[in-house]
Image (cartoon, rainbow, N blue to C red; front, side, top):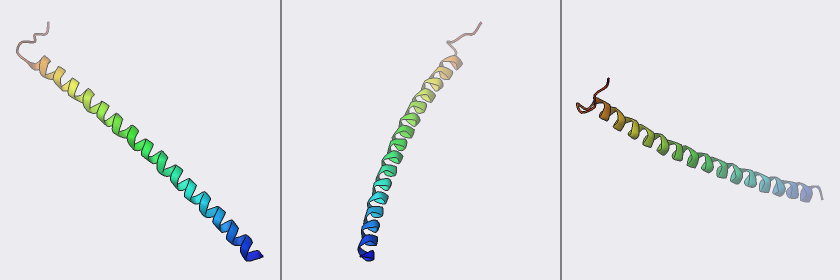
Length: 64
């Protein structure tokens, strides 16, 4: 009787652990997606700033 109760508890704990691991995996994937999107956004901002710098440095651009 004690063994069957322990086996049942073990099974429940295994299920809870698996569920927690799946949740954590999902959360981490979501964070990776956020980081990827932020990296792409920053890359685009950097490109735009580089273009602005090039325009400001061009001989046709005069600053008064």
